[in-house]
Amino acid sequence: MISKNYKPLDESKTYLITGAAGFIGYFLSKKLLDQGCKVIGIDNINDYYDVNLKYARLEKLKPFERFTFIKCDISDKETVTKTFEEYKPNIVVNLAAQAGVRYSIENPDVYIQSNIIGFYNILEACRNNPVDHLVYASSSSVYGANKKVPFSETDFVDNPVSLYAATKKSNELMAYTYSHLYKIPATGLRFFTVYGPLGRPDMAYFGFTKKYFAGKPIKIFNNGDFEHDLYRDFTYIDDIVEGIERLLSNPPVGGNKVAHQVFNIGNNNPEKLMVFIETLEKCFSNTLGKAVVFEKIFEPIKPGDVPATYASTELLERVVGFKPKTSIKEGLQRFADWYCEYYQVK
Image (cartoon, rainbow, N blue to C red; front, side, top):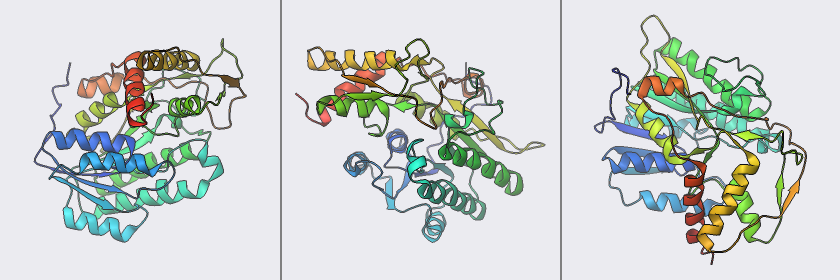
């Protein structure tokens, strides 16, 4: 049931999407363009993972006449400001960020540059060029090692266990402050382990697949403890995009409250890591028509990893009538089919 306050997507508005060559950014841009919206895409095409995949995504957006791409790093304040002044976006979706929990331990500088300074530049641009709605990526990692599940938006989130999580919590605080001071309607999205075709190669399911086809064993960071295995709320890309799309035209209303809200977008159905891996093996077996079994090495849990992620999606359902519905069997089968086609695996 959709809330009576829910408004459908407004195709007359201009949408600015940062991180447009990224996984979620590409799929969101395509969904909006398919509906006739005007989309301004920003991305710096950094080499955190294979840039060919980013260019492959952009190639699929190029045929749309209402798509404009600007190669830009959001930490470059001057270019961000000029882009806002020239295109006057109505709705801004900030998905550009340095991703990855483990990488934040190795290379903290880029997280401060992109996730803190970059987001500050977006907030400043929205302040000086008023927008109808700012939607920005947060992360399930803000919940840290919280024991209470499912994670709810009202939970205490002041104990991040990685720098990546700390930057995302900082984004929520920064957005709240700008909403309070400058009346910018803002919505934060706490994503839960997004996966699917054209996904990020640094994600575990993608890495396991690459290792298998390279004839190498996969490393599983759960101590080999199947009884107390890691749980993850794996969320298929189409569900993530539909959740975002429904929120775009539904900014929080100020009045006596600050016009800032935060939503979980997760599957609300966590799976054990080993079940996820077994399902991935079965999906590749289906695609290739032969048994696929990964060689496995079990290692201790990595610093910054959390034992479980599990989203309560009640708020999202109540406000825009949406609950993710794609099973991991369905989602991973689509990934396996895409992977074999894209990398020409026989």
